[in-house]
Image (cartoon, rainbow, N blue to C red; front, top):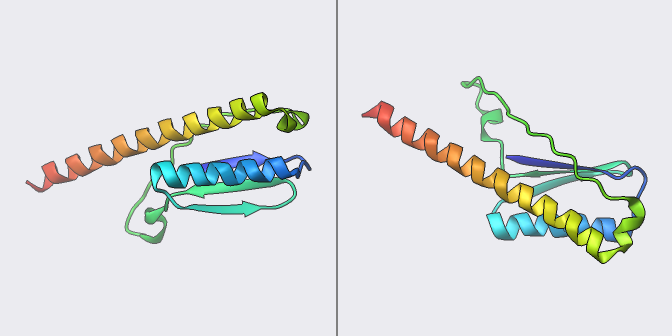
Length: 117
């Protein structure tokens, strides 16, 4: 599961909303992961994937969080180059996080097969 939070700080431009939709579309198309978006005037939180362990109380689990802040000035949403750089950085981080998650899932799958044999 990947979570992205965008602090709007009262900035609700059309470009900001397009950026959020663009990121959600990118993650869905490139990684095949659904997204849930919760948004208000102050922030937008986007959760990708599902957290299947939440529904299973037979597990104790740990959530690992890597916090990376990517900043853009409010007025730079009108600058295509700076906006592109902002979006590209977010996409790159999402791709890397997804790859790490896939590798961990593969390790868990292999480990489960080895312990059953």
